[in-house]
Length: 196
Image: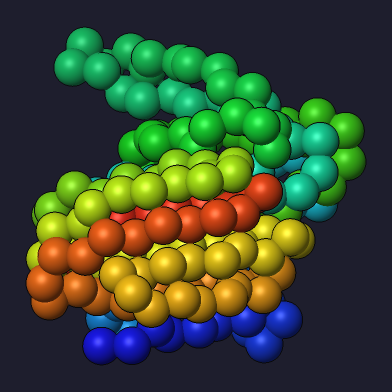
């Protein structure tokens, strides 16, 4: 399978489920309401609550702007919520948290643009990490890999194949056999999702 390429500028914005912001869904697999994983870019212009996603694990990374402070409150077995506060900027690693948690977002200093990876809890593991410079990894079969290049673009080497990723663009592909991947970018996101 070759690379799928999705430019942010080509994706129409839609309102959040709770109406508090805008999002652009770059890819959802399978397509439709019963997706197992989903990648999107959100524009957060005001502080307020995040939409709730039951049975979903979320990864969140700031792409542009001063960043946010997320107050994540997860119910405990005793019925008392466990509250944790996370200050996230373009330098911080992505945050992984429970999509069912009550999550409040406070902007640090003006609007931000953020990347979201959501995976259903029934699916196999996934991960997201920042790339700043050179990144090398070996990926096993039956994984979906994705790279989101921010405003600087990225260069990807997949085995012997090279790909230039324009700024504000997502590329992804599902592997049927193991591969070696190199990513060269000042600022990008790397994601792996176990295939359905």
